[in-house]
Length: 288
Image (cartoon, rainbow, N blue to C red; front, side, top):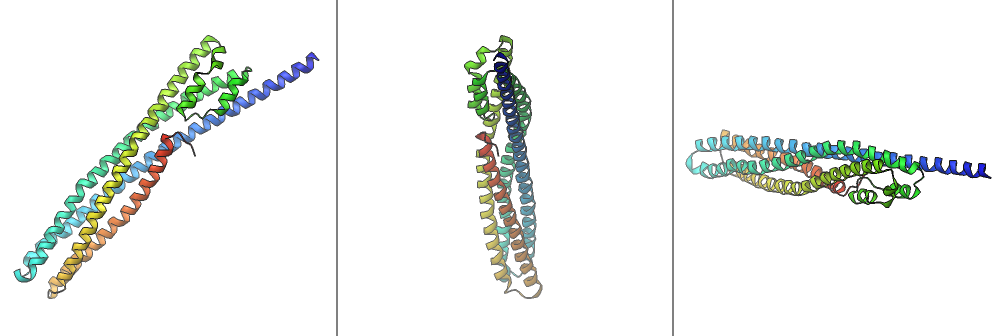
């Protein structure tokens, strides 16, 4: 009878140990995935920044086209070139209004990249500390602390409130004082790091909203430039020979540049949308 009881106890202990190991592995896997998602967010911020820089390059290209138009319009006889000179002059100023918006967009993207880079470093530290914490907790479970095992199985290690609840558990009070001290130290380190990560991620969300506003402003400026380019084309239709060809090319160049800007806008908006969804998920501690 004692042998049977001993065997049952051994089986229960083994099952408890296996369950604890599985919980620890699942927790570590969730944290590793969370770390990968943060790294992906850093990549998204860099992608947006790269597109922002290409917008600035295209705005400069538009400005060169328009300034060349001013020079050419000045050569047209006054009666025929006055409207073209005015249109080209307005056009040449428009890319300058894009530049502050692009610079603002770049600053917002840099802030997001800076925050997520810091989060990436913190996530590495969190992974190391939390893996150690889960290992020690699993050992406590393996020693027969079934109530702690239930709490450990329900633990979502990317949720600060779950981590805090386990650290405040009465079950830990049964541990050896030195083990308990180590657990609490590790747990507090994990909790502080995780809270800092989610704070930084939450602070990045408004930057994404500002980035989207900047993209909208640049798009509106670009569409106005397209309209002015069309006006140049209409005015140029009345010019003879070389002047007509030159200003038709100017109008086409402006249209082509704005079309290129629009393609970039769609890319950057899609990227911002992906970034917002991912940031929201990360700030909530949710793992794919």
